[in-house]
Every structure is written in C-alpha cells, then in structure tokens.
Image (cartoon, rainbow, N blue to C red):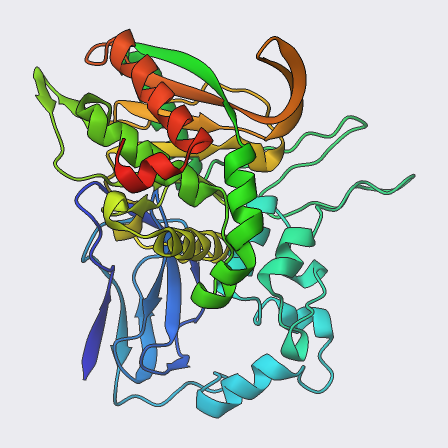
Length: 402
C-alpha cells in the first residue's frame, strides 16, 4: 500500500518552505515517526516524521526545493521489501552507534549528526565528516557543531573548500546563501524601518533593589521552583505594568485603524545558531515570576536545538530585547511589526550617579523604548518607560499595582 508523505501544516503567515536535507534515500526502510527530512520555513526548521513503517520508494522533492503546506514530497510502500544494502530497523540503529568494519569514523559521523548539529554545520559551511563527535558512538552534538570552525587555508597549500562555499586566491572570500530565516529577518527589519515612524526614548534605572531581592530570595526561589531567579522576569513584570497603564504601547496599526489588544503577549528576543528568533510569552501579565523564568529557559533551550514551534513564534503585542547578555551598554531596538513598541535592556554596570547632591556608585542599566510615533505620542512613551523604571527601582509597586 502506498502512503504519501506530506509537508506538515504551516501557519497562515508562511507561504512556502524549503527542504533542507533528506535523511533517507529511495529504497531505505523507514520506521513510523522516524524523521525523514528537515523542512525550513522563515521561522523554524520542522522535522517530518514517516507516517508508517515501510520502504521509501519515491522522493518527489529534492534537497533545497521549495514546497508548500500539505504538498506530497515522497511515497512509502508499506508492503515493499528494502533494497539491497539499505539500512533498516535495528541495523540502522547499530550503524549509528559504531562504524562498520573497514569504515572510518569520519565517514559515519555525517549519518549520526543530530538534526540541530547538522543544521548548524550547514550554515557554517562545514562538512560533518570533518567534525569529531563527542556523543555516544561518535555522534555529533549541537555543542560540537557550535564549537566547530570552518577550515582555513593551510600555509603553502590549497585551501580546503567547505560545502557551498568558494575559497580562492590569497585573499579568500566565502559566499553563502542566506537561510530563509535570515532572509525573513532582513525583510522584517526593512519593513519596520520603512513603515514605522520610529523614535526611541531612553532612561536609566538603579537596579540595586532588584539585585538585593535576587540575593535575598534567589536560593529559596530556585529550591522551590526548580529554576533560577533571573533579571528578565522583573523586566517582564515591569513592562506589563506599563502596558496596562498605557494600553497604546500594547496596540498595533492595521491600515487606518488602531487595534487595542485586551491581552499582553510579550516577545522575548533570543539568539540562536540560525539567527534572532522571538518566541512569545502568552498572557505574560497572568504569569508568576517562576512561570516566566521557566518559559524563558525553555525558549532558550529550544532555540539552541532548533525546536521552537511556529505557534511559539507567532503573534506578540510587545517585545523585549536584551542586548546586555552580550555586553551592550546602549542601543536603539527596532520594532517588531505589527507591534508598535519594543523595550531594549542592557548590561548593568556600576556607574557614578548623583543622589542628594553626592556622587555615589550604583548598579545602573540603561533602558531604551522604541515606539511607532504614528500612534504613540512622546508623552505615553516617556511615561511608560518611567513606569518601568519606577517598578524596577521599587519592586513593591508591582505587588500593589501603583
């Protein structure tokens, strides 16, 4: 019986995707739910599982080809026998653990690289065969892929050529096609620049109170909830207070209309091996500090492994970008359309400030709020940022809603 393998249902905002790499070839036996191919959209890389046990008899779309939601890309015959030399079942599992007799370790690492590791290596232009895996049976982990470096030209010899990269001459250059995610990031940034009347207001916040709370309750918090008490949950709570007080900061533009959202979904900008992604904290104002920290930790792990779902990356009414994790002192964040505002936070550093006529040292963080001046006036933007500042400098305000 022939079973069709179809592209998973994509979100309405995704017009098409592309096949990254098939993990099986025609004639191979496949097990139900075994990943057959990685499909890349402008937001995530999706794994496509086999719908049934059988032989992969026909591949209709090859690596790199564009596909659409629900399109048939292969066929599986549930009654056919695997072709000679094809791996199947336990044999495939065993071959993933140890090299076959007479086969070099490097020849098998390509077959046992994890999907996340394989994607990272492809974007770096590094052949999996050139990477030593630290996982079981020589499996290449995402950490191995992140640590791997592109080969450079050896002295006096020809430069090795990485996949899809041309390296020539004494002053080599690499030309690597943009991934769909990188193209989408570029499109969104240009869209934001061209469509928004973007303006940024700045303020500084004394983080001493937050630091003291983390020092006092951090250990108990982690024991009770199983997650570290970070700074981001404080920023999220402070932002929610500002968005409730000034709903226009949580609104968006739709044609000639202003859409006021009766909920607060905050996008948290997260760096990943594939680029910047913004997973969404749904109903952030309804979440506890522990729930916020757990979701952010989960987003970070999923981003590293390329496991964020389309649903987790869709929507959002406001965003927070934390350049401080990379050491940024100050920046002007770009609005994430169709949102109308974004908060940029930075590294907290001891700085001299004046208090009661005296110069003292305080842990200061510079805040930046970029907003769409078409619908948000300077008054709301400035007072919204002041609300965030006051909530961070006196976190008790968050308890009483003042």
